[in-house]
Length: 133
Image 1: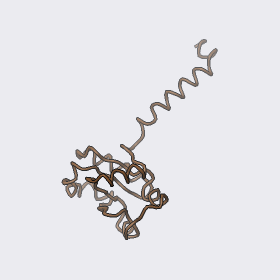
Image 2: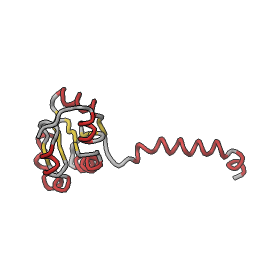
Image 3: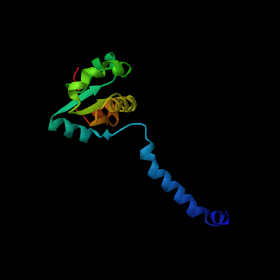
């Protein structure tokens, strides 16, 4: 105890750096892809884009060739994606929060190569990339 009190600054740094190292492991979602990484994956081919927003949001604009399955329906409609198990799957939502939940569900269902679009469709549009209606 005396050591900790005498070296409180060093002990604080050790605790903070250890916490910073653990933070990515504790993050709620799976793998994330930036807009640049997502466009590279799409351009390579063999990529499926899954939009987990509500149909009304999807109708207002979405990534081209995206398949719309709302997050609330994903568990019952996951069979529609069985053909995509061997493909890279990019999950898109509005900001990225729903995408994290979808990635977890997809990984639990056996999908291995699943990415959440970091920042969602908002980041996609902010980068000036096209959306379809």
